[in-house]
Image 1 (cartoon, rainbow, N blue to C red):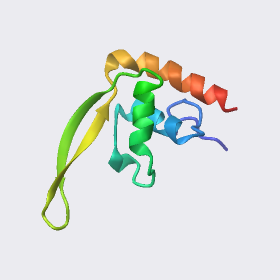
Image 2 (cartoon, helix red, strand yellow):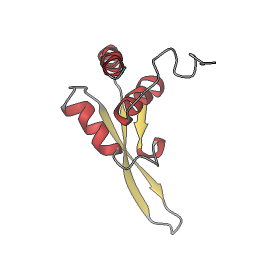
Image 3 (cartoon, helix red, strand yellow):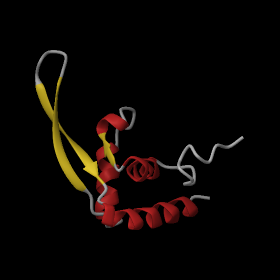
Image 4 (cartoon, helix red, strand yellow):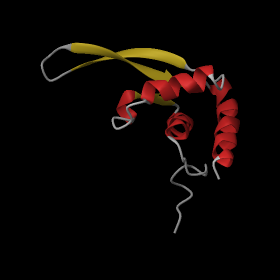
Length: 98
């Protein structure tokens, strides 16, 4: 039994690029902490921006590791004016991989 509410009605992603894009659509933002298992996370975000022309905002945030050292990481935010473009792109990418 398939649960269509799991991805808010969007088709199931079949690539890591689609998975990052779907997370942007459903959460509105994405960071490396959403994908600790994906070694090419930054590449996927870069592809969405350079290859597909999706304009994302970026906010730098900091965390502290277990040794007390701080580090910075990027939170990529999908602006409201880009959401429709992202939806069209996601549906195009998922229909291509059927």
